[in-house]
Length: 619
Image (tube, rainbow, N blue to C red; front, side, top):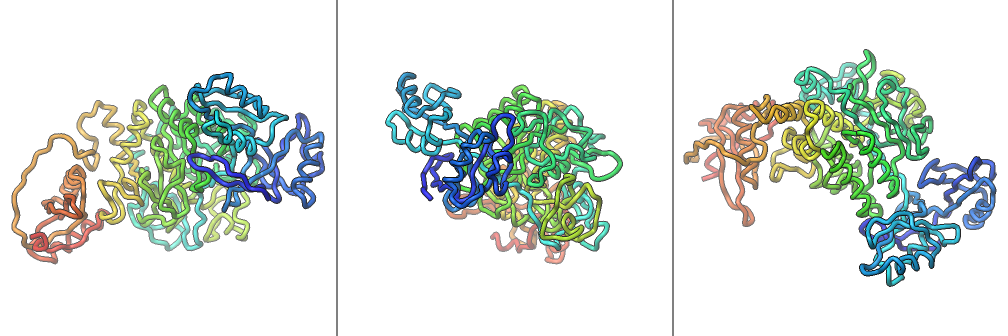
């Protein structure tokens, strides 16, 4: 099959025609099935087309035959990027950047040459054009345009099915009840032991608020497969929208798509006396159905959220495939929502980091205006599937040791390689026909979206930037302190989300920044005026070293926290490492090693890692 290279995002990719798949669009008031050319349906919606296999062996000849059928309005080849089996469908639109200095007449000459129509002008030299019946296919047109001296760049709009970040756990990683809300260290109907306190402190946040959030807060979940009749969702649906039907008629019942239901219930499931409870059960639920890589769809989904009053936007999907990074217009669509939504305060956008065990996050999660969420486990450990990166804001409880519980769509067929209840429950114990085990960064992300909804319930005036900063400042450090540089870890971000501390800080700011409301650390940045009592110590005895820090502001944050927790002196050794100043922090100064070991045990109970160290080592 022939290969063509086209621009995609910030790079170019090589495309090859699929040897089996094509895209068909039905003529008005017709059904594609009437054409009697389809052998197998592969995807019902992609770039406005239905992706199918045609009868016969020669894909080119069979597509030409299909195009002549009355039931078919448009037929297109489907492509694959080099090294990927992900179907790609050209939507028919092309993003064109002309060379600076070209006038409108010159630009129109280029469009006329390839029978393109102007769809939208974005800037004096940037337009979106679409192919017509007289044009070559959009992939070829983009290639031709790249050779035109008046054109700086041409990128065909391609649609691809994005990854849904649900991790399918091994069978020994099972869940009973919602330990992510409050972890007591055990699972009711098994003998599985969890780590007590390894949770998001959601129940504590409810107690602090005195309620379970506000019905004035709207959480949009962008995904596919929403069961709007689910008992935990049906009473709270608000302004639903389906990108594929272009209406409020959200597609339901397609077994290809079930992912949206568990994601939505983790964030929002109602308190109705049975089933599960979401993190923000009183918030309104805005289902936006139809995830898409397409530029037009990306803009449409975020503009819909802006225009219809979404406060929080939860996205448990994305891609780390290097062929599908984001071009400037897609980045701008996300930035627009994050900065201009909520009447200028910004929509709070939460994205899954992804489940590929990569050293980098999904291209969507890497956007600087979003909250990138990784996953940790019921043992307060890093979930090994969760992507790492400098963009990670926080991690949230999900599977990897024991899965989450979530709602399931009525048409969800479960895992086909399993039998009986094991299709939905990895231990085979049926906990209700409306629910199943769930996980991945897909589960962690709506959990954080629910926490953001609780924060906005506490303080509706917070900006999106403030919500992100508070989440990061109030997170609990898990893992070893050495994994954090200037307070941030590539695995854990700024730590495991703590709903209680985040809500407390939101309330404090609502009250005008008066005395802190039981926030564990009142120093959030290391900046400001602090009282010091500094004296030189003799290097004798034992203490517990908790980490090495490169930023003195972070030393202040940790010193205040540790003094408050353990009522022991905090010692700091100032040294040089690889040409930079570093600070080694030690808690306690004891004459015997046994006393230092007792402190170490107390610290472990508070989830603070460290090791006993002779103070003479710092002489």
